[in-house]
Length: 308
Image (cartoon, rainbow, N blue to C red; front, top):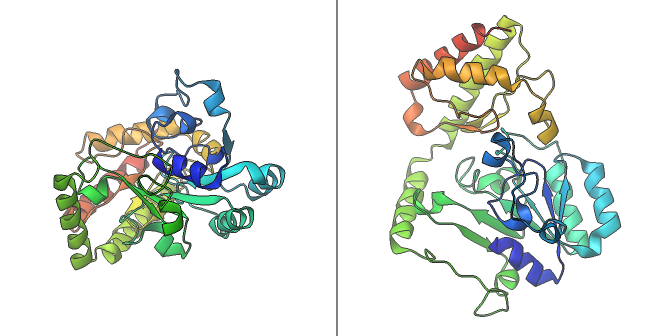
């Protein structure tokens, strides 16, 4: 919410581009074709949002290069910002086509619009510097979530000084919050980030993520089921689909009933997947060794036992 307000205040423009299936919190102007719980419950939009608010949001398909080029060609001088999960993770995990995020950066720079990376899901998870470190793209603003508070209620945004200076009290864009700078959350966050720096779990995450991905794909191949397992570091998702899932439409078109069967099979055997096909799975350092072996075995067996 604050990042969007800041982008509009800085640019003097109103339009925001978001992508179908990306969830950026329950902000009025962004709860349009959202992912996460809104998608899971089959109610992607919410009552109580004036049509005039939603009208300022342009919703495009992720990975549609031509669509976003045309939008900027038609409305570039009205667009304050693009907000995007660089690796969308609220309708399953979707990875960008080669060059797609670079295109977003190029279009924003050329049109004096801001590029906002929502790294609430990916920040400190795929790398210490998030997706932007992995791919070498610097957004104008970044949004981060509970990880910076060690799991406690907190969020943060940051960006270039000349943009951030538009926030009050230096600038005209108002921002406040009951939990802003909460000492407990900040202490927990500092401890968590120090732990990440000291232990550097990211090579382990890559290893574990690839291990479980390969086991699931092998089981699906043996069963003769089409399965996509997009994976990056500790994040992965399962789509029972013939083709790679590149956007919201591909995700909702996958065989979610098969995911539901696999979820219950695994749950009965002590392996907890997210209860929705539109959520992303996460690994952590506690999943090393015997734990990951057990989970991998259960999930592979579950796929082999799926009734078509």
